[in-house]
Image 1 (tube, protein in one colour):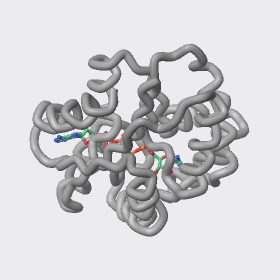
Image 2 (cartoon, helix red, strand yellow):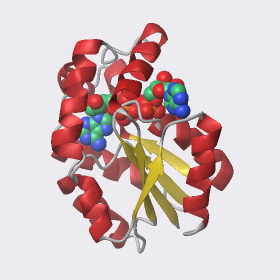
Image 3 (cartoon, protein in one colour):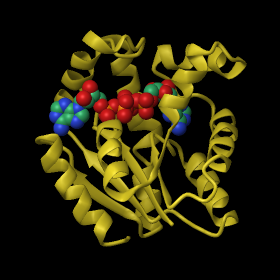
Length: 190
Ligand code: B4P
């Protein structure tokens, strides 16, 4: 199986590049952000809890995310491979993912770390906020998402360096230019 983790700060292009990777390699997409937004829309128990965290720009607690991910992963049994978009975001989530995949006889193939300058991240998210209707695409929440990213999520890069899976991707430029760099990295592990 080809299992790709796409990683980066909020606004780094994870969702955007995931769409292109899915088309190119025929992978299934698991975006924890999308799953959480669907739960919020459906006003489920999980959705109601997640809403408070997301609107403050904080991470939803690990145990809720890991349970949710395990269910989604089960629904993808028999898949050629999966792109994990927005997951893992903490070291405990990364360890849980490894355990879940190992149990299914597979592992993470590569972790793509999209690297984008902070000013560009803020501009992209503010631009998206004009049309997305997302309650977390406003300046105050964006600032707190970036702080959470630096404190809780960025240290994960070192975890994947240790696993020998980390590839840094220059995330500035056009969507197509960035996708070209991604293909080069994925083709080496597929
Ligand atoms: P996500 O939905 O994962 O949101 P995100 O980090 O903003 O990334 P996204 O994929 O949407 O944006 P992208 O960079 O592609 O998470 C939302 C919230 O859910 C989190 O803050 C957290 O509270 C919660 N959550 C999710 N997963 C969790 C987990 N595992 N654990 C705990 N909590 C979790 O794109 C941004 C914009 O940039 C787009 O408008 C796009 O069009 C534009 N763009 C992309 N590439 C560009 C380029 N090259 N040039 C110009 N613009 C570009």
